[in-house]
Length: 240
Ligand SMILES: Nc1ncnc2c1ncn2[C@@H]1O[C@H](COP(=O)(O)OP(=O)(O)OP(=O)(O)O)[C@@H](O)[C@H]1O
Image (cartoon, rainbow, N blue to C red; front, side):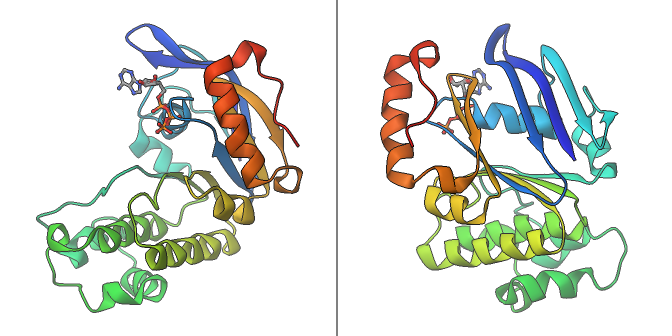
């Protein structure tokens, strides 16, 4: 579905990602983990078309989409749910959703099915909703675009535990419907439970690719500390 080949990317000339290879097979969920500043958000920006890589190629279903803008990528079935509450605050929930519903009338029903809370709040101004509710709108919007690949950057950030559970149930539903997911997530245990594959990034380089069963949460966190201080060159993959 998505293939990043030897991606180097960064800001104002300085590379943050170095020769990163990453594959998200069709229908698979990949958890992208790593310590603060590892380059996870940067990688999602590259995959989602908001940051052009300095080098390397981005392929979607074998087509080269390097340099394509996010709105072009939607046509390839790639949608991003960025970090933070990506809603139009002055529009109602209904308007926020309709903008992304692409004319199909059952779209709002789909959103309500996913998040019943939204059904009771269709006329509320999105900006006046709680953080969790705004995140539901942002997630439902991506769902309405009938995506084949959803890029998710810390979508549970700052949410109450009960809302986090709801968000993960929703992601499981999106996955069951056949979409691929690439997710950056602070709730490592939940990410591992959902993921088919894990990619661990540190200092802008891939340190480990494997299956969640090969890792456990505690070891990942202890490896973060080592990877942050020791640097990528001396990091020896991930402790098992
Ligand atoms: N817009 C930007 N301009 C300049 N440097 C940036 C920008 N965004 C990120 N960086 C730098 O790129 C590096 C990687 O940041 P990135 O946000 O990709 O890491 P991350 O793994 O998502 O971290 P975190 O887990 O803390 O969110 C950091 O050193 C950061 O300071």
